[in-house]
Amino acid sequence: MKQYLISMYQPAGQGRPDPEFLAGVMREVEAIGRDLREAGCWVFGNGLHDPQTATVLRPAGDEVLVTDGPFAEGKEYLGGVTIIRAPDLDAALDWGRRYALATTLPIEVRPFQGEG
Picture 1 (cartoon, one colour):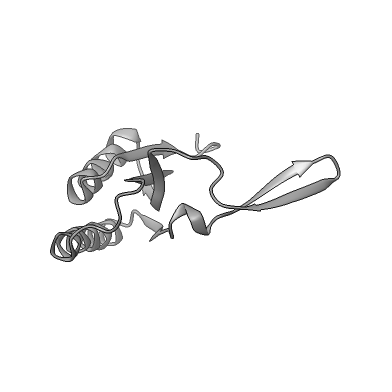
Picture 2: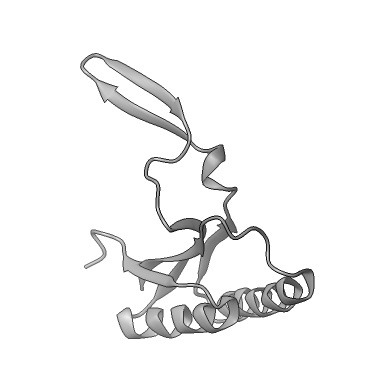
């Protein structure tokens, strides 16, 4: 089976959602995780801290500049990732659809290189 990255994008500057809404989302996300494990498709997944916690390393000749903050400013930021195994893109997209419906967030599904 091939591996796919499922990326979850959150809107910038909107803070945390209502606790009741977030609890429902988390129940759905946990259910998807259980289903992935039962199907033998789970590899890894977790949420990320806000982009302001990022440290960026940029090559500058023989040196590396270290700066605080996100690599790029945008209207959305990467909020979490899940890596799955799936037989093909259609199967990976089915998992991605479940995450999109559960989280109400934009979801990107992308295959890893070298996977045939």
